[in-house]
Image (tube, rainbow, N blue to C red):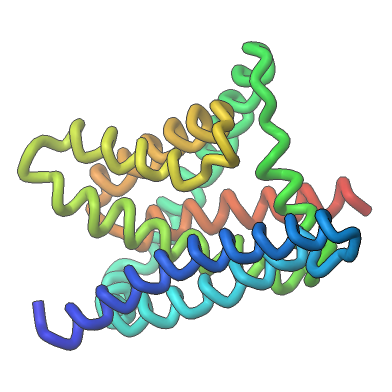
Length: 225
């Protein structure tokens, strides 16, 4: 790996750590405001704007690092990739529904991430939500969890690579100590890992992830009207 790519990866890591610190600071400011009885910042607006800024910066880093590779892969087999995105995307939606219903049947709450999405749409707008959650988020997450993490673990076994990367994907989506997020997103991560393993095309898993998130954003927006 070139020196420039190493520096960009370090930059991406710093941004990720920075996000955690910023969220902690915002939470502290919010708690201080509650203590003194003056609303210094709302949780929804603070976290939404912070996540937007960090995700956009991370997207720039990812595009600088892997933009050429993604473009070449898409241009080589765009028709096949598009067909695979639609095929796997529809199945992904079905799996998401089944997993959510199973969690509901088990008595596990699955509303926290939906509430966050509603808060984001309310705090900014539908277009910004589509850009951040529907496009930027999936690109960043697929590059990190499938392209990088799975790629690094592949030498130790495909199943292990899929499971470990999916577990980390689930942990990323935890809301507090919510079991629902870990359960749902780990299973969804396993499916995305299987897609990447079968197709060997990161553009397919990115497309499927974007398709899934965009449909969910539109459904949440329509139901919230």
